[in-house]
Image (tube, rainbow, N blue to C red; front, side, top):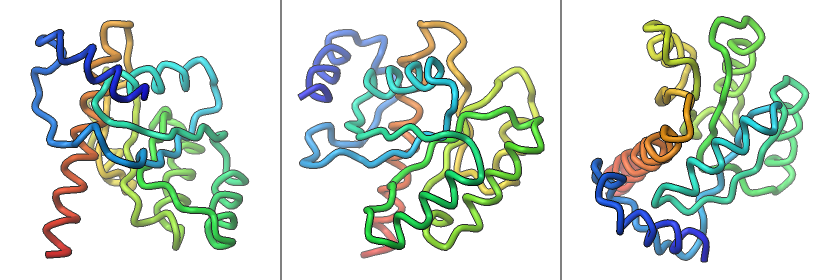
Amino acid sequence: MLGERTWNQNARRPELMEVPVSYTPNSPVPVRVLLFKSNLLDALHLRLAIDMSPLWCDVQVVEENLATVRSVHAAILAGTPPPEMILFDCDLRSAECLELLDAVKSSLVLGDVPLVVVGNHEKEESAPLARAHGATAFVRRPARTGDLANVGREIARIWSVHEERRAEALS
């Protein structure tokens, strides 16, 4: 499995495992991730980041527009399994981006799914702005190849925290 191979490669490089992640990489099923990103090269970078993490994911890349949000909503209502995490790579200075974030968070079927905004790290207001629009967390967009492992590890950490909270709520 790809997830196991990546995990084993990372285990041999202690510098990549600085932040402990409690997620079990041997999960019998991958985490369903919906990635809103129209630029396929940027989407590839995020997929690589996730592949470098201990998180085993099935990533579906969709375009960033309101029609896509409506289509995903309708597909879930028709029986398609919903995503378990949403990654939204966008420029928070864009009114269109904020409108899309609001549409996802106001959706009856997507609103409770953890939403991680991946964005520009140069602006200090990015993380608070993302949270103000319903994001569970904000992750800096990888600027260099060397950032990919850290971004993937941060996404895995966010998933791990979400799963811990969900388990506590169910017990």
